[in-house]
Image (cartoon, rainbow, N blue to C red; front, side, top):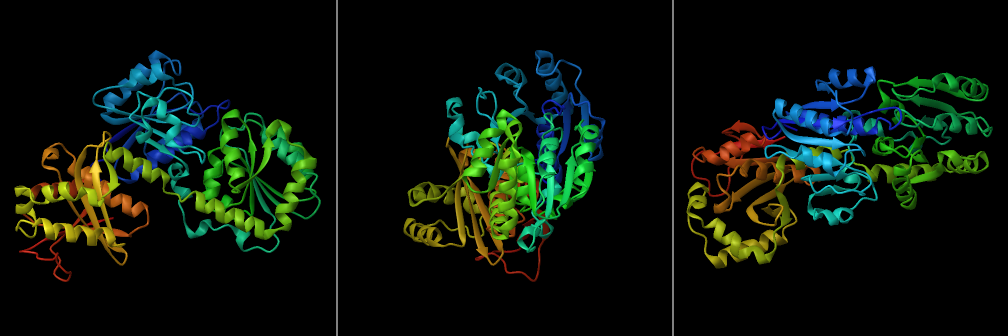
Length: 512
């Protein structure tokens, strides 16, 4: 996506520790990457002590502020707020269960927006402008008590995946191609506090049906490597076994696997995005709801709670999977359908265009659209300056609403106040964007966000592949809006069709 001036500095507060895992930090890394890809910068405020994880953040161009205060304390909130202010951050993102309402309220600042990434919906998030819950079972209604259902990004559409797990041809599961599947990856997240890896390996040592290729992944915060050596030695007598500690190309290891035995953590979303069939283990109470939802939807096989895994229950489940490649194929297809790899982009874009929202135009909007269209400034800056008769407007609107190649939206704020309109007309894989602000919304910095929101919403939905816009050279506000929104200025092409009723030259802008 083309860089946009709407993406400034991001301040992220998240930790990774052996007792809580690294999932919070890794999904914040995914968000930071998406922000960075759009021209923004990010600073991590963290109490993380792992040198490998800190080096990972710095190697990707992110600033790291090592927290000095006690985590989740008032001093932590003050230190985080100060770090955000010193960097000129437009957003603070908080991810972690210890950060309660008092902590979040202490981060509130008139010049900085606050977003929380959550899994549980068990506490008050009224201080936050946006809430992200990327779990499959999550819905905005879970947060209705905060009077904020309209500011919640809920469900797997918002799964935060790092760049390496973006949808690609390389991510097609080998299970869909192999007649006798046998490549299994075992991954229990970045730390695996209860050593569920060891329990799974002990169970697999009793699998004698066929020779398997086992890829055992240990995350950067895993401390159980030495204790795993005896069971790995036993397994190598029956199966091919590779032990990979924090592999640099994790997505490649995942993508070549026929089956993943995984913790029911954020790793599930990474595997699902690559179309890898899932057999999941619950390592913590906060994973139960998500694991059960995945199993209920038929997207994964639930092996159970890590302390209760029994060979006489797990091995028959694995045999069924290996004996039925068609079942693995279905699991792979369902997993791929669940996670499209665009969740990080959706969250980053929502932040950049906040508080604007889209809703589809209806026939009931005819009057306000007609009023906006005939505003004197709008007519003067349009390609046709004539006033639009009501009858012509009504007929035109009906055609637009009936046209499958037209996306027509009212843009409004969080309170439902209309701020303007945006229309995209599609021809093949391309769409042409036109927009207009309500007269009362001019001069308030909405135009660039409106343009960005309307264009990227269609791109992320797969409705079109790129968006063009034609602007008259004398329309200075619109020129500025498209430039701020990250559109590339193409100049005055001589070989492309101009807008209908065009008078004089028109500048072409494109995204991406």
